[in-house]
Image (cartoon, rainbow, N blue to C red; front, side, top):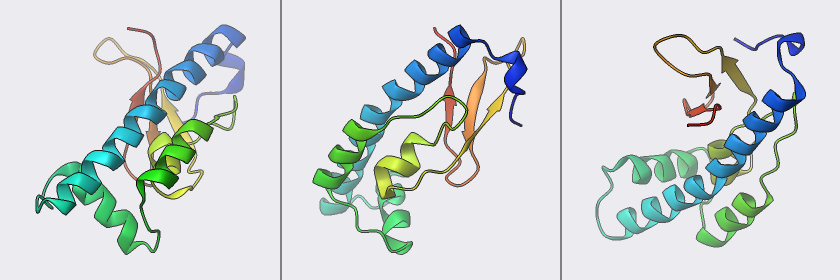
Amino acid sequence: MTMPEADTGPALEELRLAALLRQAPLEFARVVYGLNDRANGRAGTMAAEDVARTVRQGSPVTRERAEQRARGYLPLAGHEHCPRCWVFNGTKSPLHFRESTEARPESAVCKVCGAEYTTTPD
């Protein structure tokens, strides 16, 4: 569920964006691991399955293109999009924020790929 904009101040927005920006290089690493796993016959790993899913959807996955997207990932406050969907196939899937509870920190969830990212500092 998306949090109302009134609940998010500029400092919180900056923290969210910074947390999401840190995820793009990690998603690039996921692409590299997935490509390597598939090339070495390990198609059952999560990373390899993510690559295979993207290929089945009609988007070729290359290391070079994923690196370009990871470097170009730039979420905007109020229009945050999923780092995984962006790096893997260039799709700007919107993220939905879940408020923090005592059991878990605030997170951003992608309903397209299922990725979930913590948006609060450690």
